Image (tube, rainbow, N blue to C red; front, top):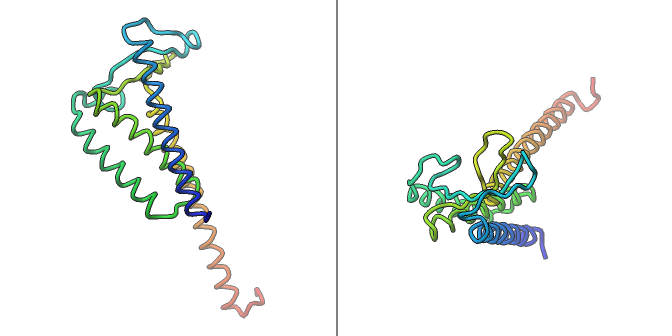
Length: 176
């Protein structure tokens, strides 16, 4: 199996695992948390509590479901097309797959529930309730930033090396 197909399988596997993890944790949240008091996981810091989010992150743009669905479909299509048609480096492949699976997970909720189910809550400080799909998008975006930094440094190093080699050959290769 060549590298390109290995990365495609990695992407597909990451997307499937991410979507399934999001789906099943939301299903558990609906069946065990809906209508119930929050369940402390780490007292004073983290708890599970059921929230239906009709908007985007932090409940912004509530009840604009179709806007999010159109944006999500476009983003999902662009990322999927890129992963299928290109041969990205593994870190980029993994980061985009995580973003893709998170987008699909929340899209499933918007499509079938009309809202996104959130259930992970940090209450040590004021922070929005979120879900596994949100975690995947954030971690994927973080990995994307890491990849961009590493790639930028690598490209700069490569250009510096090429410039140095060009200067050395112009000098006759003697370094003086």
